Image (tube, rainbow, N blue to C red; front, top):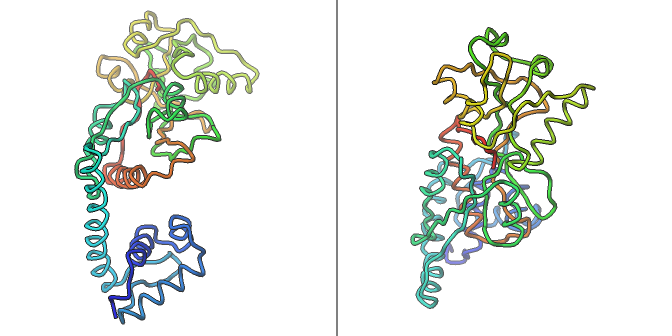
Amino acid sequence: MSSQLKIRDLELVVALHEEGSVTQAARRMKISEPAYSKRIQWIERIIHERLFERGRDGVKATDSGRTFIAYALECLYSFQRAIHEAHEARCGEASKLCIGVSPFMPPEMIELLRSIELPLHRNLTIEIDTAYSIDLLTQLQQGHIALALVASPPEIAAITTLRLASNPFRIVCREEHPLAVNQSVLLDEVLEYPWVFFNRGIHPYLHDQVLERVAAEHKQAKVAHHFSYADQATALLSDDALVAWMTPPEAQRAASRGFCNLPLLDESLHLETHLATRADNKSQLVSEYVRRFVKQMEQQRPAEQLSLPIA
């Protein structure tokens, strides 16, 4: 009876297991929810085993289901690997994925990007391209890269993003600064002092967002210096009145050199790390890579955030 099952049926079972929701799995497999549920029930009747339990928390595989899914994955990998490697043999080249990242991305993040292994693409080559966020988003839209790690991207209809992490800005100052005794700071407190602020060319959207937040308080930022690299920022903290805006990793490095590192507590100002791709990207390779990357990201939390220049 099991010979009646098709490759598509195995894909439906695996997708439901991975998504944990008929709604999400149906969207992923491009099938209606009623049709999806009906087909899963048919599969369970064919193999005479209940594969899933349905509850308030979603859909979870039974013990029998987990065993079935493990072998289903092996079958799918073998089938799809045969197709990919046959294609590679005909074309004479292996799969390649071009990913854009900031030149100041923490090394651990780049190592994670390059460490992803996909069973269906054993000969996958990862090519890293570094640029600022705005340039990476342009490259995505033009199809020069498939994925990009960007910070706090603006909404662009042609781009879809997945937020991976969020951290507050860090305010760095000398140990003799009046704010140095605090555990954290508010925007109103920071506005009392002159800033060492990141250059607009690094991230126009985030730069303007900060200044718009200040304007919303009917105040004006006192920007004394602009910087492009965090090392420049600490060099510009030449007196006890100045405060510098940094991201967590750079602020931590500044703290190791004797500067104070304070989180900025403001609900509307924070640094987000997003994985971005084109909204119309239907590549199975990209989808599989993103799922595997996000899964490993979650296993390694807390993740380090981007360092200035924000890109």
